[in-house]
Image (cartoon, rainbow, N blue to C red; front, side, top):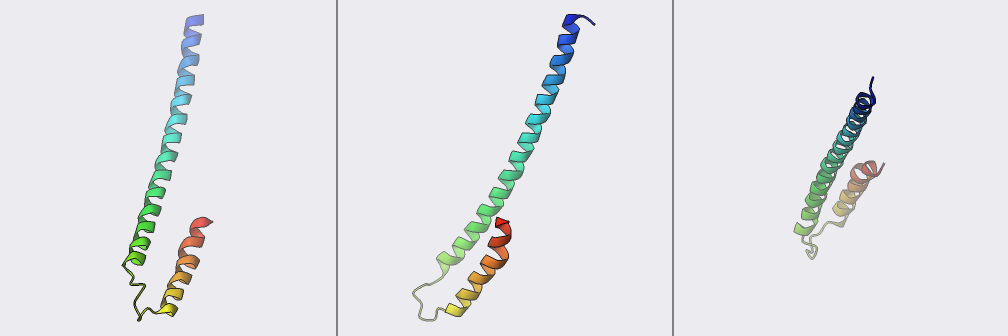
Length: 82
């Protein structure tokens, strides 16, 4: 095998490896972006619930709010942090 052919072969292997690494990195980025988008949509939904709530209402049910908060923390926030 000549020096030129050997160099060409080594370069092909290096380029292929770099391409595979880049593809893996891009896939990881895509997964992260999809998860971040889902989290932001969830956060926006929860924000809209709180913005729509009439906090000045005399009929505000505090026990209902405490139960909602407990469910929010126990079932939705804690598993996401783990």
